Length: 207
Image (cartoon, rainbow, N blue to C red; front, side, top):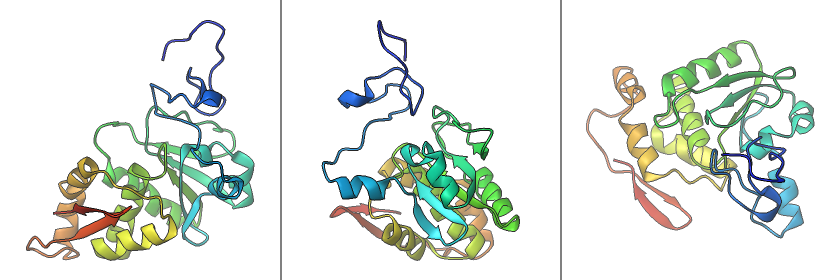
């Protein structure tokens, strides 16, 4: 986003938009949390614990709070949005996915598997923590833990209720190379089954 007169870059995403006034960043989609509940805002400052002492899921706002991440022992960050800046390169080890249109499941899962082998705590984040990063976490649970799709989704949803996978991402997710790999490992049924995921009361057909 082009710099505008008398405007400083956002202290979180580094792009030029009026964060305090609720303006959405035209580059990465960053915006202020929409909530008047102070308790809710305090809770949202912390990423969601998916697997204790290892895997955390959150938003770009979560990733911007270095001291809170340090208190949770997080040392690595998987950034799923190329437009989001890696803010604390001297404090955390970052891995950034390079394709903004197609999620690189294999690349992301390999990074998370390495983090697990190293016994390192890692935060997976997108802009909102609702769409891209949950899909990556679900992919990890399926491939590395051998879980099926529905329990993987439910596990993540129970720990981060705001998760909302878009239909476009679901289609991409199901057509990715990960699905083929999982079929080879017999972790997915060979016949297409019907799975309905409900998010905020709206049904979304996965297959």
